Length: 422
Ligand code: ADP
Ligand code: MG
Image 1 (tube, rainbow, N blue to C red):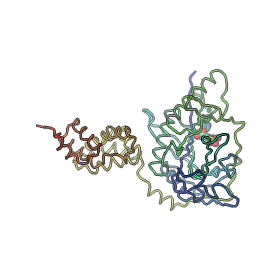
Image 2: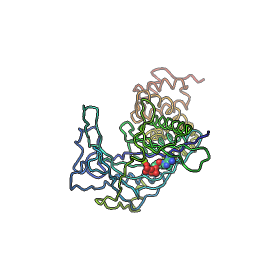
Image 3: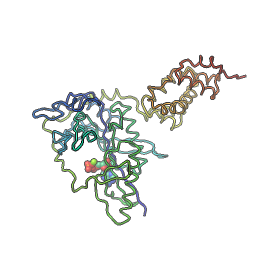
Image 4: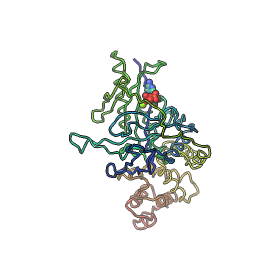
């Protein structure tokens, strides 16, 4: 029997604002539990939410970067449920009219170029945290995270494999950091995905019944969870057991997915417009203003690198994996005073994606903490271009730069590395 997979992702992106979405409390992490939860966050009677303009600006920014529609008027709704980390008894979210609708994301998945349609992106507040580790026979509640702004980004069921889902998530992760709306820290849960997975017989026109895997906070878990779930669903169907719509949790230790709840015991959230908040209205001038401040996006930067410098798609895509990496590359090139910019660009790409990336990975550093500066790398490239250094000698110079030396010519001089060219 031939099966095909259908996947739709919902991603919670924590927006990097200084204060919370409906209060002035700080969003800084690491503070004493409950020291950053104000009267609004802990839902004292009589308090009123006040919308954080910066959270809206970041949502608009995302909508523009994905060619979506920014709704001029959207509505905040109450999503009602009880949980100890939600003192209000409801989460403020958006339901019928979200701030951002439509749009798409295009990326490479293996050899193919894939476009995934986005359904919507809506603003909402995060809940607090229940702490179990330091308590015996009870749980602690930390409300510091309550009210932290989230953008929930929902796709159409457009992905057909775990590879496509992971590449989508990576592309989204790069984009939200690139446009500066999220720090992308997945360990802290600032970027987490729910994967909706179903299978159907090849050629079927209706979708199979889906199960939703909650809260995947690494690309590896996302892939493992989806692969396990696909195989589990196929096995069930082949043994004649229908899939029951459900929410499941992935267990990284055992590698399987476990039932959390089925549709019968799904919440009825009783959504209704929040009477404490006016409709959110966004005017054209604000949107235009944000549009002009958007940086060149990774996709167009990568195409430009390929067209202007003849870089391979792989090389160019690695250079745009993070805004700081692209900035490092461009700074290196700008210091390279050579006639053949394409040659310099290829060398810069090779060094950055090779030795430099390996060093950063080895020492767990970010590119902006790199011991080799763009100036030094360009000086090294210059000495390769003018044939002072062979690639073997250049590697020795690079190692010295990595150890903290700053002058390429001084290293060549001191080590007597000059290549005898004639
Ligand atoms: P809910 O509000 O219950 O989470 P939605 O209809 O909004 O449900 O869908 C949530 C996500 O599930 C979306 O990303 C959507 O593309 C995806 N999805 C819906 N139906 C299926 C299906 N049959 N198989 C896989 N994914 C699906
Ligand atoms: Mg859902």
